[in-house]
Length: 209
Image (cartoon, rainbow, N blue to C red):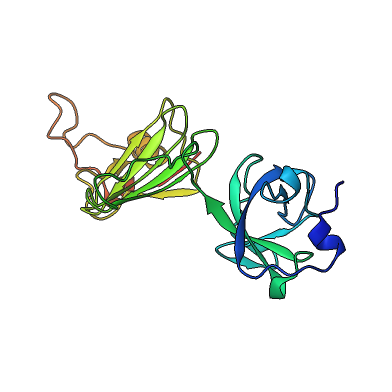
């Protein structure tokens, strides 16, 4: 590891400075190592330094670790270059945002390197969660939810269809019991009118198997 002159001489640097991430793997605290390309021709590599997060605590919070090659903004505690912190990431002429903002700022997005994303669209009043392969969920402010996927699997002990469902669900076990115990309203001859299904056969809550 190369030690910057500033770190060896207790030199002070007040303010913030750009840097490039050179290592981000193997640290369980979400820290990274960076190089200061404006110092020593980029030969100086920092120690493991902490990254500012949106929310951080013991076992909870957000984790957004910069990728190797990303440009970040670094500050130094009381100007001491031996104690740097990463404040956040920077876009530049080569590495641009995942969406264009020439038409305004109605879209806010989180997109991973693999292509998974969460899109907040204030103009369309919707939130879209999508994977790189195209599976997605769209939640509209109007109350609509659209789900697109090759296969949809629902696993739950109970599934409540809600009070506004158009038709009640026929309960299989209860229906079979009612069928076995049924009697014809008119003995012999032509069968009389069908007997309505009892309430215990119909429900708007489904038990998963």
